[in-house]
Image (cartoon, rainbow, N blue to C red; front, side):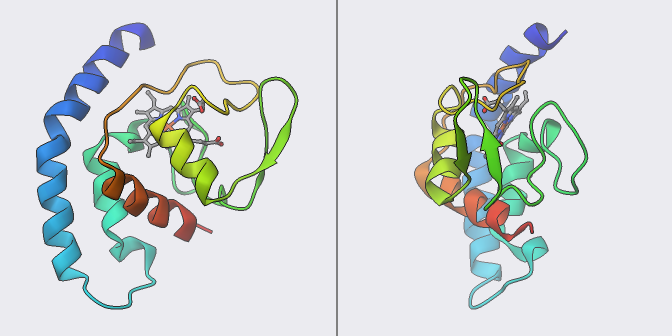
Length: 131
Ligand code: HEC
């Protein structure tokens, strides 16, 4: 089932890219200034537009991929046995290069995407805010 779903998701990700960039620009303008409410961060809308939420929850619920709640700063055991602490660099790499740092017990690979670096950074800001 998932082998069928994956190409569809990546194709949709590519189609959504320009729309997401536009959303980012609009949301970015709207949320000028200091705003620490995760619900108001532009990364939230981006993650939704890029289809990330199909596999990741923000409330701790299990999904196809690990929940984003409390992910930042947590310890993740990787395939191969090494345990790492999730920092900003780890989050960025997980998105840009999904085949790197795969958590132990992963059954489905995360799809490859082509997300512009500035959007990746905004999504990472959002993930970090999800305590
Ligand atoms: C088809 C399901 C799927 C989609 C869509 C998806 N992911 Fe994932 N994601 C996974 C799986 C499975 C893993 C764990 C395996 C791995 O790292 O490849 C993962 C891992 C991650 C991790 C690292 C988590 C950890 O504990 O190491 C981050 C961060 C992440 N994804 C962000 C994203 C973002 C941002 C998007 C949207 C652009 C996204 N994912 C879309 C399935 C998905």
